Length: 360
Ligand code: NAD
Image (cartoon, rainbow, N blue to C red):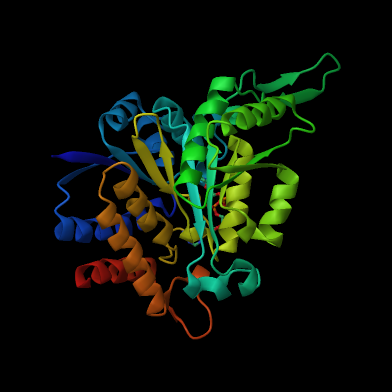
């Protein structure tokens, strides 16, 4: 069966980390005969520079046709003065909304080799394995009305709308409950139900849904407490489910538990199982072009893509094992280097993972 993926490198470190992910994919293809066809396209600032918009209708249509999208990152200083409606980040939001990728899975796993790279004490983070399920196509990032207006007194005011329908809450809830069923069976729903009516509804829907999943232990936590608990005692969590903005913030917080934001992959899925796969970090313009970005989050995103959208779990495991092998060998990019390890470039890290796959 011929399967097709669309690769969108994007901006900043995007093309650098995608190049390494494609090296690893090529090594995996050779070993597992995946029969993949790879198409490439533009998104974000790279698309603005050529087409004037961060996501063209053609690219969106192309993305809708393929089995999966592999994305680098978007954004950069040179596009920051543009109107917010056509900034690079809008391309990403357009892709998420256009493909209805409502379920964002963000694993935060601490590789034992990196326990000392975390800013938290090793005993707090050793063995960490959390899955954050973030709602991705609703909430305040998409709610209408939104904008900046001039009030009667001449002052400007900015406004956004945080809105969730019951159906939106229920469908992300189901993804979270079934994810918990495949793990340790514990789900923590994060909200701000003491202040925001929309998350009062969120809590009610999650509680009702919980009756359909008696094998999952459901708990609720306010988002401010969840942020604190993530750095106080993160191993108490198995699966967390939350809104778009809370998930955005909490997953960046969780990333630091694992040593670096450069280690964390993500999957964004729609109801048909079609997915977009990307590292959770941005385009890191501060380090772009220096060959020091960590490509492992993107490489691990390829593993998630093989598992969730391409039904190639064995190939996914091969990539994850190769990453562990390379970390065991002491190779580290600048963001995770520590005493007794060897610093390598972005490309050298990609070469090492690809070589580890060939040697398995
Ligand atoms: P960022 O994630 O790009 O960078 C935050 C910090 O982490 C920086 O110091 C960066 O150097 C470091 N970092 C990120 N990825 C790394 C990697 N692979 N290896 C080593 N270090 C890494 O977030 P930011 O600085 O807030 O945003 C930069 C740009 O990225 C902005 O334009 C923002 O809008 C965009 N952004 C895009 C996405 C996306 O494409 N999914 C996500 C977040 C931010």
